[in-house]
Image 1 (tube, helix red, strand yellow):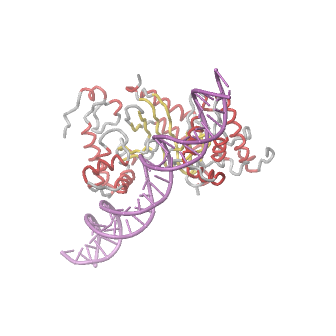
Image 2 (cartoon, chains in turn blue, orange, green, red):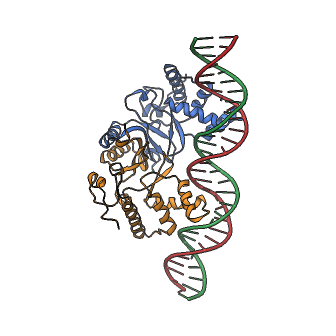
Image 3 (cartoon, helix red, strand yellow):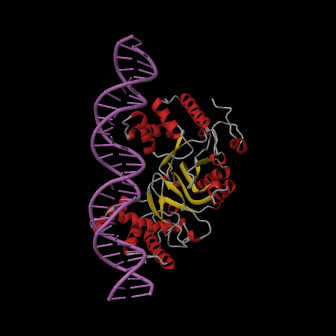
Length: 181
Length: 181
DNA sequence: TATAGATCTGTTATAATATAACATAATGAA
DNA sequence: TTCATTATGTTATATTATAACAGATCTATA
């Protein structure tokens, strides 16, 4: 499905090892339909492996979250869903988002009060994986990063303080390379 | 003012180099009035140095924020202010908080939608200082930490991505040493 | 010291985000 | 098939935050 359509920019900028683009900053103009397909596919597998139900509603909300690599507000998603289904009330969206966050398929960006598809499907099964983001204030792209030094620094300082980590909010905002004049 | 009142626990747990307790996890039962005095005093100095006006309202809001080392919601502050002044509307609090945040005297914790006094007065004048927190989900204490490795990891990954940092939200939640069974 | 511009505060109204509580429907296990 | 569980629909409301404008206070300077 559109597997052959890899545009010049994409070919220049990244190795295509996975159809879910992990660094949208470096892959502008990529074939995003692959991201969506890959995200939904991974979600199906993840849920069935865990014995959880990715219902049509939840699947559709995930698909809407994956319309791009930009965080989306709950009420934006609500409006999109209302376009297709008429009256939909906030709890419908919030419950779907809660499920998707619980499954590690979506993350909430506290600094923006918005949601984004998880860029590292499966990584949350690992011993220590927390979501850390770079968020461009100009183009709006948010990239989930994996950085051993950052993980190490956080684990180290927590250990020294005798602190047991339950949850990490790490959101670095600024300008991505392309958006700096 | 209460400079002599240093209780046993405080004496055991930390060197008193500064009357503003920087690590409340390690200084339970400390003489908190020193923290308040020190925070207000520092705020006066900082504002006058910068030509900003720490009005009675702003000063009082800062004092209320400093009632403890726990994040406080804007509407909690509003209620406290209403107790002393009768009708007070939300913009009164939000404007004061905005000023205090702008001056680096208060931080907003995005993961809690709450505010806390800056634990490192003056540090924000340095080249790179961002507020990073450990937040105990049990006792509610939030500690602003300074960690060179963490700073380095963040600067390093941003540099490698060509990303220009404007703002950092780093909030690690979990259980502090005392609150783990 | 009078006054004009700027800043701060008061006030009303409302926006944006999120959840509680309960009713109905769909699902899956026995 | 029936019951228990889980998911969704629906109504109402809570919580956090801001817009817009009026009135008060401060500060610099004529």
